[in-house]
Image 1: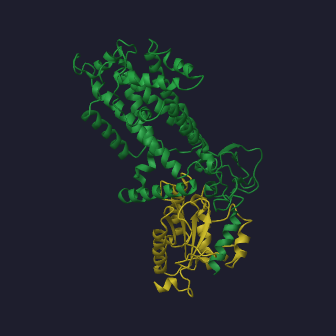
Image 2: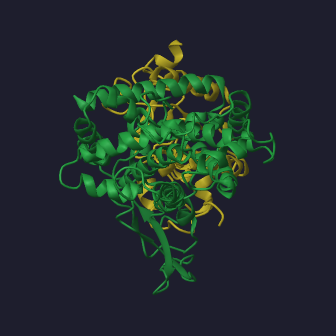
Image 3: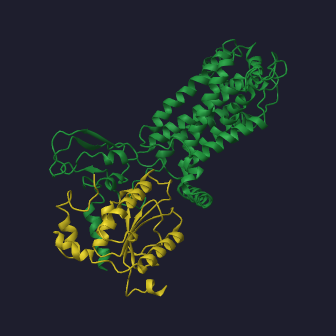
Length: 175
Length: 392
């Protein structure tokens, strides 16, 4: 698929959270964190898939990513016992929340592969990218967001400015 | 060397999982439920054991005949004890199944390194469970008091005598005296039932640092295991060998390969070597969690550090408390209100027990109020990485 591997367009832009104990990133990831086979995908290493706050996936979408996923160990075999089941549940909940906020919920996903399943993992990520590429262009939700009160700009400035008003920020999980 | 071996074993274990996951959905992979299956077999053993206990008489004269009576063997009317033969078979074959699944559980958690960081206590208690289970199996074979039992007693005494200095004392403690005394069978009965009760104490220790332990397999595997045990009990009736004779013990041992392997090895080893080997294996088993004292940095991953509660943001909602897989978070009455609006009315405050925390960060994902952090993976860092990824 030349449209994905070509370095110039780098679309769809995908952020992935990769558990340290799941798929081994050796030979899979370049130094800058992008995947060797899919330069449009950036992997961020985390200690367990359960570590991911669903709001970070949402944050990735708001920051301009076309998709975000979490990769953990196979369901039922989490190194930390329950992490992948928990993140699977949380992402399912978040998809409902995304629907309300006019994001296509298909832009977030969970992928579960074990330590030595590198090729299968790459295939799953590729399928995810293709699915995202076929989605209609994202609705202007990010553009509408500044009107809701948050400062504009997709960059480090946004990440920093969101930090202080952390707790009661809109779009959080309802208690 | 050991590290490379462990890596290869891990590769095989996970490869087997992948293979099984192709057949079953991962929710039903039996290898993900070895702990629950052990618990299932233990429950079967306890229930059938209570039944047998009601009929068993622990004396030289009556032990053998009481078991013949249960099973309805020739001198007695068949079915004098309803389903006695079946229940004895269940007790026998469930014990074999129990040993199989706890060994699977042992090797699987060894190869997948589930004893890392502060997870050594489940490992140590698991080793205790394994030791006690083997011991209970052997005392159970003595209770039957057939020729095999007699041989087991002779071989055990012989092996214990090889221990220097304290060997004789051990023999006395175990058998109530040198050779076979009238105390033997009552003592064996206690050593069969007492340690079986102790298994539940060790199980408590096994579970105490675990939230939502998977104590039961999926229904399909429960039914499968039950069916397999019932089928084996019906097809291969569990029988005693000939009554133990008063003379010399027999030379032949009908082997139960799941419990009596140490006795088989006496064909090839001297008792002293066997004792030494057993001690080495047990001590090594207890040492396994400490063999690779690797810090996260040495394992090539970033050190997350123990999770920290941000006092100002914690609302006492208990989500992290429910989700922490290691019971490392406790809720205490809050000494003071929090700072943020949501945290001001809180009644509880989350506290992380550092000795239990394995630094997995699951509580961070659970917290919708940004009241928990891993020092090595601050939310800010993650968001900066996300933004950088989206900028390229």
